[in-house]
Length: 205
Image (tube, rainbow, N blue to C red; front, top):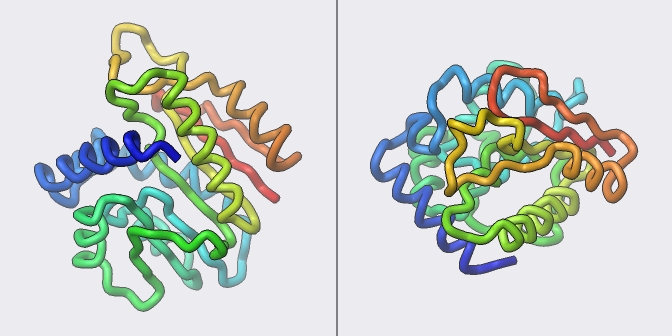
């Protein structure tokens, strides 16, 4: 995976959390309401009524855990982020026994579900081909880490042109759907019917 991109992303989000703290702006979201809506859509990948494990890939300060703890009673939550500042903030906020916070992942470790929120949005000054390579490699990783399914969201190319920003990446939802449908599973959902300029892909195995 491109080390330059990872370093830039790390620096970008570390700066955000240091500036805004454990708030939606600290992970580059606009509001609590939009963040909760994203989490609600992403967690639709979870279909288990028994104990399960979930990896929040790019967890930030662990807001996903707060959302899930209101919905589920028996689960193990692992939050992963390349930003040490983010993980330290998550550790400070969440000391529950069913949580683990990591800045590195073991390749052989798998989880029932893997969820990634917002990790593909900020391409900075990277070229679109370089960023798309990073996206595809990361989706491959989400698949390899998950046993029952994974989900992720991305900004959509159908966003209103006047609000689109050069440093953000706007993806073609049909191309990501096709990638997941042909490569990872026959059970793939594309959700583009909620009121944000993004879409969510859900892959069930």
